[in-house]
Image 1 (tube, helix red, strand yellow):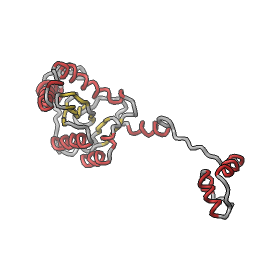
Image 2 (cartoon, rainbow, N blue to C red; image 1 turned 30 degrees about the horizontal axis):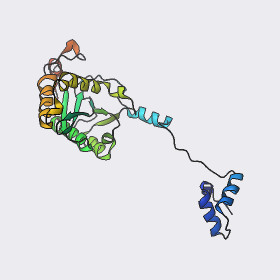
Image 3 (cartoon, rainbow, N blue to C red; image 1 turned 90 degrees about the vertical axis):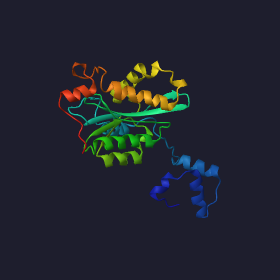
Image 4 (cartoon, rainbow, N blue to C red; image 1 turned 45 degrees about the vertical axis):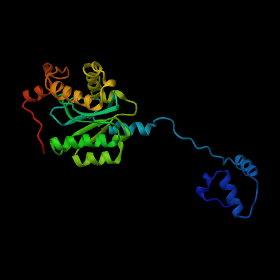
Length: 241
């Protein structure tokens, strides 16, 4: 049969059908043997893991390159989700950390980790500080952060998305460090598995905004100043657009 270039991708059954359409009726075994002898049996392989192209693309999408410093507030932000087991189910915590001083500038908590949790975290950020044109928001590649709805929310807020590489936990190390501190200093001190979500939410909120941001010595900051104290000492403030 005359062969169209695309017909070279035909499998055995499609080739048998094509021959039958031209009046040649042969068994599937005959087609397979003939195609094998002619070198027309193709095995399609799916790539395993991340390809070089994927790696290169991911490298471009990571805008912060593990540089967790910033010269001014609200220029480089980090976010992620952690979970806490409570008496009435899991609580998912979604904060935003400012790389300038380690301040938690937005916080959403709820009983699921659907994309709306992350979307509302960004919306809270915009509600508090206005449109943050050109500010980087870095996260991992969770499905919430790569969803169309989340990315559309980022664009609306003027934010530039930065993403960690697949399975590269150190790409968001400073955010992970905050979660470790929250758990060590607060959550592991509480019987959260016997507390209701609302109780745990209150404890987390008070720890972050009543202590972590305002009083706790922060080793990332000059002279160990608490986040808000560092921002105040430099005369830099959060301005809403």
